Image (cartoon, rainbow, N blue to C red; front, side, top):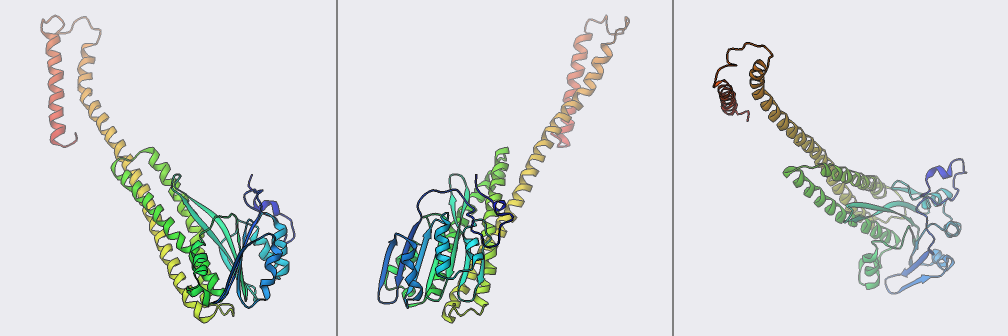
Length: 351
């Protein structure tokens, strides 16, 4: 069972309790240290190997895959003087995306998303970033991320990132996370458009289930993306000395991306609301067609039933009972009534 916030009820603020999927694998730590002229990249055996990077003039990026071992998080917090509430947020994977300014460092909480095409499902993993004067520390739930393009640019030695400080590295990581959202939005948009076509052609009960599933995924996406406007806006317009003037323009570009994605999500929500209306209208039309057919049939049989009921009365003397052609005459009358009524309904365009 996945631990929830209720596990921390009554505990002191800053208590480190991992809230997320239960994991047993070993925590993986990668380390990249660079400037314009040199690069060092390695996988660390323990977190203490990254501690000297706090005071080096180069830019260092410590990436921790796995936050279920809270002792490692405690060591990082103690060495880098991180606030206990920050560490508490790191091990709580149910945090809302946000940014907090602690003076000597900035703290970001973001959601790294992936789209499961088979299940048409958006999967979210939490990513936390700590931006200091010479370092960036990232905390991830698992070892799958979208940061490979950033690593490749660092390794190339020719990219702009090697000539800038840790603020540009933090921007690059945030930008990589947000750029990945565009691909998810495209996949989700294609699934919505495909379902819309199916609903327009022949709506089925299964389509309604798919629609509510897509609405749930759009809600997941919305929770991850909507706070970005506030987060990037604070960084862009804030007065933190950690964000240099030259980097603010790049955060402004990320802000534009966030606003564009929010517009797309609003469009998806409107489309799906209209799709629900389309489905309900189609079902209502089907029901109306059935009722109309049944009404026509009932109307046709009313006079026929009336005639049959008269000749079904148990009176001894009825004028036509002894008539040789009485039976066939009544059948002909019933058929004539049916034909006349069908012609009338046809002219009225009721059938």
